[in-house]
Length: 101
Image (cartoon, rainbow, N blue to C red):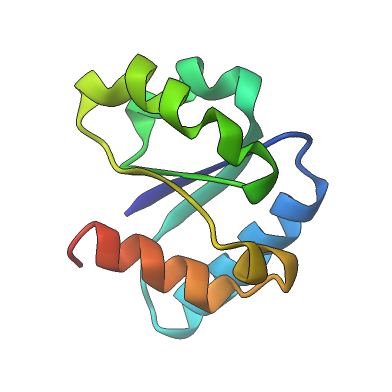
């Protein structure tokens, strides 16, 4: 599973990625998880199975879906509480559930 987190700047999202990787490793899942600024999305999206937006850029959800919907990849916003509290396990499990894994 390849998960792309998209955010405004990247600092708090990087911490969330670390927590998600830690959880994935603890259950022996071989996941590839990265965080990047929204401006890099077009260069990266084809290499990932799912795109998860930070809540601070949730206003971009519809335009991102419109631009990249043809790729048929799930694009969703991370729950504010999970993001703010860096709940890596919950965000990871949401990605798995969305992908039907």
